Amino acid sequence: MHNLSQEEMDALSFHEEVVTSDWIRLKRKIFIRTFLGLVITLTRSMVMISNPQMYFAIVYPTTGVGVDNLASLVYPRLLIACSFFAIYLCALKNNLYLRSLSMTAVVIVVALFWSDLQMYIIGGFSQFTAGIFFSLALRLLLIFLIIANYIDIRR
Image 1 (cartoon, one colour):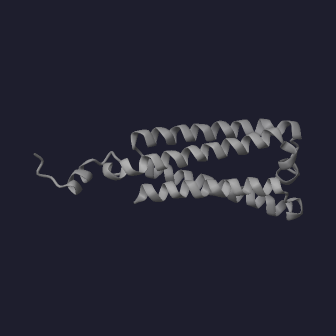
Image 2 (spheres, rainbow, N blue to C red):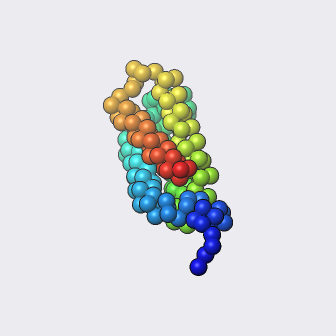
């Protein structure tokens, strides 16, 4: 029989980011949001690879990169994103370093959104097509999912 209360046991289990009783409730919801974030990221990347001319005129108007070489710019970014998702999923599986990784994910996704928005503003809204709007909406959805994960982990 333990003489320690649940709060004392939680304080002693410092290696766990989310308290065990809350983790059982939140784990599935966070995994689903993370999986949806991965699907959104892969979808945006596949659209950029399959339809590069949609992005090329507005995002890379002054670079020397051709439309054919745009996919070569996407692959390294996709590799970095998938690596981060793998690390994030390992942290979720083991309930370790979730607060730090969730905050890092929020910063990365918001920075990427700001970078996209800046390119769209500089490129002009005259070239703002339905496909670009869809891509921006997917990025906003990704921000929502990552922030929702962060809020649940911080509680």
